[in-house]
Every structure is written in C-alpha cells, then in structure tokens.
Length: 328
Image 1 (cartoon, rainbow, N blue to C red):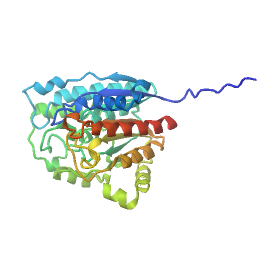
Image 2: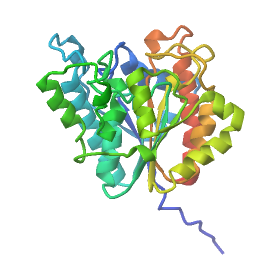
Image 3: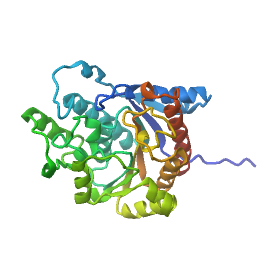
Image 4: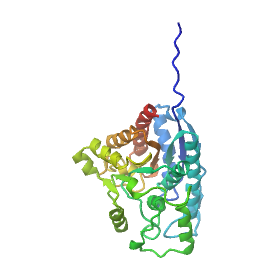
C-alpha cells in the first residue's frame, strides 16, 4: 500500500524585496548593503538567495546630485517616491499571502514598509518592534541633520513634535511631509502604545522628550542583560497582545560597533551582540504574529573589517529565516 504525505499548501512563501536606496541617509553606501549581504552568502557557499523569489525596487539614488535641497528634510521628494514604491511592493505581496523580507539601504524605507503593511491590512492593529541604536522619531521640525532616515517613525505615527521645534521649514517641505504621513493609507499607521524599542541608546533632546510623552518602552541592552532576554521579549509581546500583526525592523547599528563592525552609517558602541539580536527576533517570530521583517543600514564602504557587518547580518538573516520556515 502506498502512503502519500499531503504537502502543507497553507504555508506562506517568503519573498525578498530588495530596496537599494540610501537617499534618506547622511552617508553614502548603504545602497550597496544588499549586494554585500548577498556576497556574504556566496562566500559561505550558502544558497539562501537561490531559494526565494525576489523583486528589485526602482530607486532614485541619482537624487543625491540634486543641488535643490530641503535642508531640514533632505531629498524629501525622492524619499516620498521611494517609500511609496516600497509600500506598494509590500502591500501586494502581503495581499498575495507572501511573507516579505525587506532588505533596504537606509532606514527611511521603514515608513514605506509600515505603510504597505497597513494598506494590506487596514482594519488590523499593527505592532512595531524597532531594534535600533536610534529612536528615528524626529520630524523636519526637530531634526538637527535633516536626514530622513531619522524620521520614519514620526511619519508613521503622524507626529511632528512641535513642542520641541527647532527648525522653520518651508511650505514645500511641510506639504511633502504631510504626504509622507499619508503613504499607503490616510493617517496614522501605528499608535505609540503598539511600539516597542530594543537597544535605543543614541537620541537627541527632542526625541527624548517625545519618547517620554508617548511612553514608548525601550528595552536597553543593559536591562536585557540584567533582567534576562527571554523575560524582556515576553514582556514586549504582552505589551503588544492586542496587536493582530507585528512588523520587525532591524537596524544593524543596534549591534555593538566595537564588537561587530563599523560598517553602518551611524555606529554606536555598547550594543547587542549577534546572538542577542538573533534570539530577540526568533522569540518574536514564534509568536506567529509577524508578517514582515526588514534589515537596514549595512554600509560596506564604512566597514574596516572587510565585509564583516554584511556577514553578520546574513548569519542573522539565515538563522531567523529558518525559524520563519517553521511557523509559516
């Protein structure tokens, strides 16, 4: 008698979305991060990138040569276009019941990803796990640099933080900023109660005051090591228990630059190690609420250890994908 094993046809397929854009950053080179991660896989003789379908998002990296600039939100018109394109890719893949793994250059892309998730699931509450050395909650009104990779969460929250305004922005910038806040669907994509930070340790005063006002929990590296990683992640998941879906955004600068690599645009010391980041993401994935994961800010041009940052990012990517395969 022949026995046949029925294949699980309900398992979602993983789709890699490659977003080689670095126009939201202050330092060039993170657009090369995706290729650096692929090279890391090839050098390890790992067939990861042969296993999954992928799509390349059209970019506007040539906009860095545009001398007409909005100094408090640099290249905001091009960042708006880039985030809109990425949002559409994320939305379509989610609607087709795929699991998007987004590999992006700079972190401004996260606004596009969050907007795409909300557009795909407009009636569902979205939880955001932000693993990063930075809060990325500036707006054009508060940013000392004008680099939009420090603003995606402010746009997703619909927050300007005018109580701590330091910049007088032009009408054009204000209009473009309003359009950024309405990518995908009109209005707020996520509420502050449904956000949790891991590893934030480098912020400016307007961000610090905003975090106090919005009461967003930040699990610091020292707290996780003192109280225990598993306990802290469980706590975070309990905080997001009313969220139907979760997005994980992983910036490689959340890791300790002295221990790992300086191959990222804004490196910060005293961060997580590779195993801690992997464990945080794996535990969140096992909640079965995660619908999208994003990796950002690998910059091989700044790496003083060869391709170390990309190699580390790939090892994390490979490990968490193996966990994903078990729960999808």
